Length: 234
Length: 322
Image 1 (cartoon, rainbow over the protein chains, first blue to last red):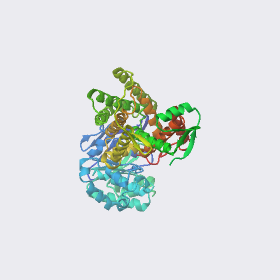
Image 2 (image 1 turned 90 degrees about the vertical axis):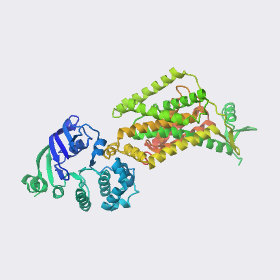
Image 3 (image 1 turned 90 degrees about the horizontal axis):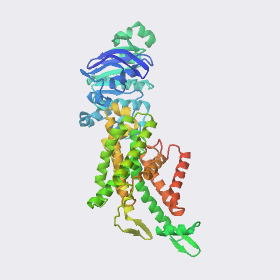
Image 4 (image 1 turned 45 degrees about the vertical axis):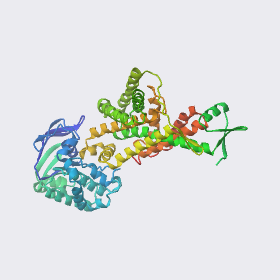
């Protein structure tokens, strides 16, 4: 479904990613783990098109999307839940969802999707008419996930969804991911909360200093000596 | 009703001439007396002026809110609107108000072209480049107008009665401009608040990157927004041609005051622009009558500076954005 081939990227002269290659198959749940500043967010930005790579290719469903603008990639089925959630603060919860119904499919199925999302995150239904900027951190994170799902994406990229949230909320959001993958949505989760994400995914990549240093099934990484020492605190 | 509340002193000859011209003063023994009806009259004038300013400044403000571009040539777009309205009136004998939809559509298209050709390439440029580009647009549009239509002042007169409500007089052309301006502003408000397009415009204004990752075609929204802003400038031009004369440099008057209004109200805020319009209208109308017309603008600018000293982000700055 998603192929990232030899991608190098950065911010003008500051190079962040070195020849990163990864593959995600349809229906998979894949984790990207690694320390702060390793390039995880940068990689997601390249995949969704917010950052143009120096070199390399991003291929989605067999099509080279490296040079098409973000909103077109989104309409083809890639969506990003950005770091820190970034809801649109002076739109209501409902308007945030409505703003995201940008494809014909999303518009046609909007009411159904919203019902489904309100069952998944009941608190959003209660806050429907509230300005998104006034929601709590956890509620904003849920809204950001819900907003991504309005488009009924094939591939959902989620950046640090647990950052700064109460464990209970994190669990709720991860439970929703389980349902999503049940619905056939492919997930890529960037996470520093390593144990949780490895438990909830099929495969994982470890990124350090802009390079992929380790990859394998999440189970393998869980028992990997290096990962256990450096990231799981065992 | 009649109570002498204020005495106008100073250059009496000047005052009398001006106030009589505006039907606002009664001459009594021992001086000129301003009474309560004059306050009501000036209040009405200021509200009418405010409605006209609203449509000008809201157009400018929505462009700033979405593109974060300082369009110094907004007044020149109004000037174009006035000329188009003028020529349609003169050449085809149309009522200037009938020309309004044509002018609005033309300015919308001009806005789309200007955005694509001039604004789009500089959207991410340093602000000095943006400033110079829109300043250049002023010169381009003014000189096109000068070549095509010369520097003559041109106006259209519409035969409409002076409406009187008791002792208050209302110029019908100004009333139409007020109603039209306010109606156009409210239409835009409705579009922004209730339609899919409006929600996307607000999303782009607040966070263009997030708008992109939910699939909003941000460049298209930016172009459309510039078109809408230019359309409001055109509507303003059409509404004002029966009131003000047009010449190639008339835009600088409107462009500058529109900037004052939106900075005063809070950049990017719809309601702020509306409030700012009425404040400036109020100050100009009152100062114009009570002190002198020449001082009206100056006092409005002074008030502008004074308000910014206390509220540097404008009255509704950072609070109630579009």
